[in-house]
Length: 565
Ligand code: ATP
Ligand code: MG
Image (cartoon, rainbow, N blue to C red):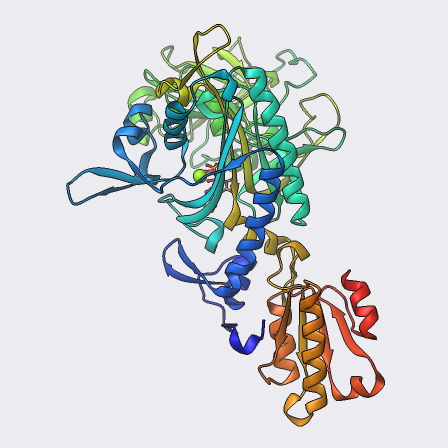
């Protein structure tokens, strides 16, 4: 490609609303342009990268035995009513009407459509297992679209759905997909980790997220230094402390504590560490309020809490009015000692081994010191409801947990029969009996990967593409072609030879000053840069520089082809 014939539109200034480096660099390189919140146009340059990612994903999906298809993005309401998700999916579902006032949604995902396809197409166990996939545009009306294409409203996803006669077959395909994902992210040159993920309402242990490691990531992951254990922090289990609860030594005392409301206030007021303070959070239960008790230095894990039998499937803090009505005190002074009997007290495993602790006094401006479980405060149940912290023992018993941030680029999930049951997707088994099919689903955020790669690979001058994702592998830059027909001819012949060898090359023939030309080539992240100049021609060399190298070097044409092969 001759750059003079391509629309390259790099910019110097960064729009103020770009918070993270990938968003800034994608805008500066001119890969994307914003149309509206969460909606982006991919420029010719951006699209070249997106297509590279797509190609690797497609190749590996095909290699893993999945078959490609394409489903509509607009989906009828009736189908979503069959699974109950027309209402349940919530605000992310963009609902639209046609001219006959019939309702549709713009697909945020395709379980309904693919299961409808499967129930019509698949009749016999002999057609199973089968794994359908597509690479297609999704729309989700995200509450906070941000970071450019990282969390957009419209984005490109690879979604696959497998169908099986039994759970064993599902587990096999799940493993094949797990391996395919590992190959995909390795080929794309990303530093990533597969982590155990929460399975939400469906339950079971069969879900992994593929997380690209980056400080800007929205997800927190926990991993062990002594084993392969890695999990999303939403899922990571906090083990019960090994040591038993010490016996009570202090007496329970009510203390006046005006203006002492937060754990930090309490530690300062009493001169004790946060791990000696008990904090109590009141949340809305199925009937009335529920108290969740944790150590002062720990945080609630909302995903774990939402699964408590007393809670309605989500963990929502009680309002000040609800707390006043139920306990007669303001938030900040709640504790388990003397709490009304109607309120269940769920105690975190680590909080349950505290003795002689400080907690709220259930009256305005008071706390208790010397509080002890059983003697002063009842325990309804001990549960794991906290977020793990760095230094916790790994739940598999090997090593210590560390925390890192990640960007979720892929998700594999054993769905079971949730959708096939709702849509009555059955086949006949080898006994001629109707069986509901088992399903798996496997997503990859194709457009998000582009941003995630930049988060990992950049420097102060711009993007550093991994070879597999780069818009071109080589940039040929020509110094002063106007002054020297020999230079022009040499550049043309080099470009022709590279292209003939199937090496994707961009020829910067725009006639810019060297500084401006090099700045662009670095900003857009081309892995190999070759400079053709009069001086080099005289010496029989080319000036070569790898994007991630500190210096350039003079090499021969043969050496260049050696480097590129
Ligand atoms: P997240 O937790 O980031 O919202 P999700 O759990 O909703 O992701 P899935 O429904 O599993 O995501 O979708 C499959 C993949 O699609 C994700 O792993 C992610 O890479 C990508 N993805 C999801 N939402 C977005 C978005 N708003 N913008 C870009 N990519 C997205
Ligand atoms: Mg989401």
